[in-house]
Length: 293
View 1 (cartoon, one colour):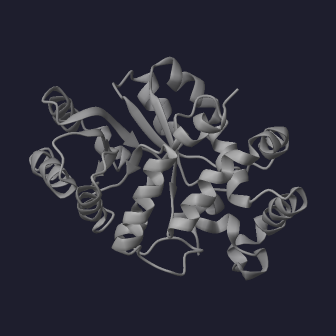
View 2: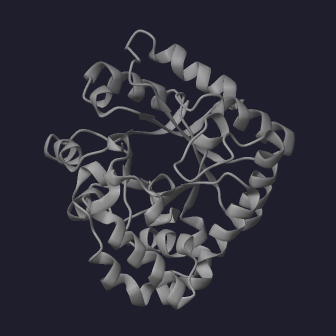
């Protein structure tokens, strides 16, 4: 059974909000540099050791590099190269990432697009970068289970996979065991569905009519059980035995403190796991934010 420290270590800090305005429930926009510095301090003191970023996250890599240098921090960093990266410009793209971050090596470099990872030439560039000691792991960010199935069926080398997972989005559950059997490190994102879980159902557009009742039920469950909604959502993902890291973004330092505090509700959430398993939504118009209207 995971203890509080184990749950906290499974958290990876997502940083898209450091470089872009992001999130359906985020009214504050991009995180300021002073707030980033405080978030990093809290993360390190809490035992969070991993950051997740991408070239496509605006100024995120540069903000991370500046904050790490100023605060003397040393995080494991996962970054992603853009979908339009070609074989010929891969090396320059990776150098740019390392320079902006101010490091000689990062934990992992992922293809931000599955199509990029199907390109044998780009996989070879990743392999060379790994052999050169510039990255420790290679991998890919995916949206669909069939993409993971292809990696497994074709036996394509992959150290890390990042995929969406939440109380609503449980599509990848049947494949988690197969990935772990291959030694794949599994990182999950979108446990808060870009903040959708925190929005009052009546405030949502008609696009979400199909899940408003279910969303309200989850919010009411937390209210009745006196469990913070963020704690329920975060612990639910962290309790999945195959998942290694849960990537969460924060807009303010106090949000990170609240998320770290999610471990205090672990026992209560564990009791609710069977109920939450039954909350899965199969409608990709709902569980994939790029389909939202």
